[in-house]
Image (cartoon, rainbow, N blue to C red; front, side, top):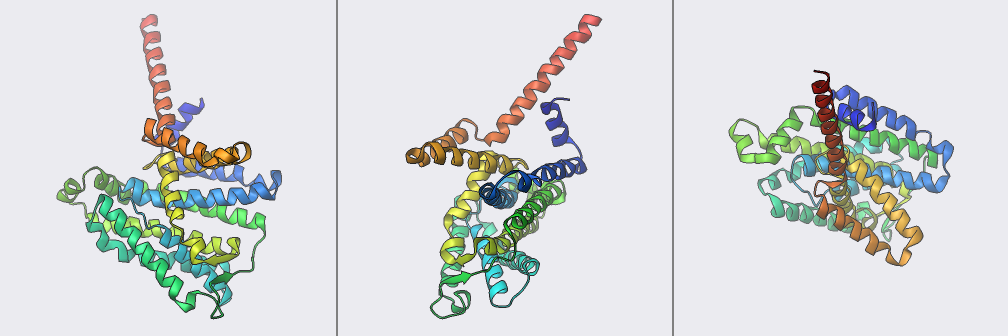
Length: 334
């Protein structure tokens, strides 16, 4: 079986097969600390975080068709939950990660009324909510540090770099695994119907508001967990560092570049953009942004479905070629 046949079998196979492939992929990556230096380990941690955030956004933005421009607020809230919990209250990392996920999911409930809007209006409303929370956390003395003049939180790292690597690898597997389970569940089918035609879906009995709210809460919880785990890795947390609009834009960019509405899209997009970024930095420093931007525009223009659509088109062509060849072979034997 070649790679194209294998990819098609996994894509159309049962959920257990997809989860098993994810486990094998993680097991291979787990060997990295034995093979690469600290620079590459740190880079891989950033790649894992970016893919995890993009996969989370993909649930509501790609599968649900509601492009949220405020998803960075959940990452920021999680990061502040991690920083405040560790420094002010001395909580262990697993506790602050759960707290960050819970707070982000609870905050997502505030977005439910915004789901009455669509398209550009929904995107702008979510962006506005993020800016509101950015201002509140910047002004609130409780989130600015232990001293009145502090603007952020300095956090002593509780883990070594290899331990952080395994932590974020595990979180990435959990994010992608949960996405597979949700997409293959009733929630996923409802999101597919909503993206195709929400009015029609509602008319046949799909409780659109309910499923959008559930998907949005799941989509928000994981950035909260990732933010809380990322806070001690970052070592310093401030509003400027974790509420940057570029964090949300990066989620969207990775998803669209790889393929929105697909499981593999954010993974492909995250890896591809990281490789492109490194090559541009190393070889074309002065033209880094130009090359990076030009490639993004080229892919999204020529292949609106992202890199994943290019690969699946190749898979389908190979399958069609084999089918034709098999048919001719049967005719020749007859």
